[in-house]
Image (cartoon, rainbow, N blue to C red; front, side, top):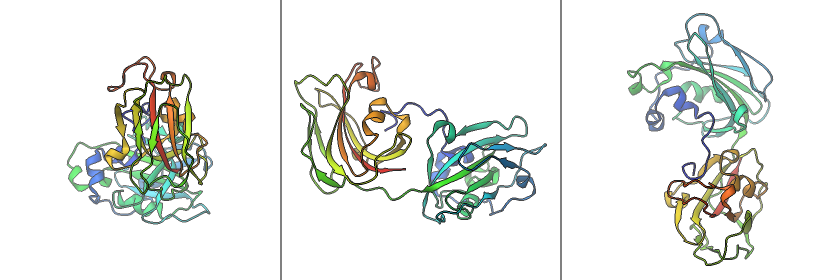
Length: 318
């Protein structure tokens, strides 16, 4: 999805990659050697100020950074508890604790795109335990030093100690597997969508002599009954994208066998405008004019000034 649609995120906030250096180790599920430690002496000296729900201010002690990973509950929260297996939705802010500038590396408060993090064995143990100690509305401080990396990575060049402040927004409900609602019979003139039923992907046909719409056009093919998508949310979707008039497919999450997840604010304007307000569970077809897509620039095999057509199942929003 992001290869074809998204503008580059201002800050890569996939925190376990930042903390552990390489995606390979994080994705392998290998356990880290860090034992659970609720704020040993060096980590405990990190202080966090500010209200939950706003970007925090972190103050570091003088001297060298911590070498032992730890966590500390800054505010326990009073909502639903977080347990292993949940996907916790957080706003997070991350710092490089290098003992010098201790610079902030990024914050979802700046990008306005909370992260959904699976609480599972792919996380460093310190976070697996830490997340289960806070509830919705809580704030967690986590210090991830070199001992948080999987054992096979610990011989690699040391990464700076990372400090994370997590504000727990809530838990991500399980996404739907397919659009679920009533078929409307609507479509865009010149575009055909066939709904095979079940969990099979719809068939999108864009081979047409009709002129493409000059403006964004969105039609609901299946109307879902879930909450309406908000502009500041992240979405889980299945989709197929083709070029108007040629029937050329340039991207499809259905072909990859896995839904896409992304902040709505970080994709092309046609998606931002077309999906805001759509109920979860819906299937929509969108015709996106060049000025809301890629404009005058060719994009990975998509010719300049192309009108893009997508069929999208909105499976979840958080």
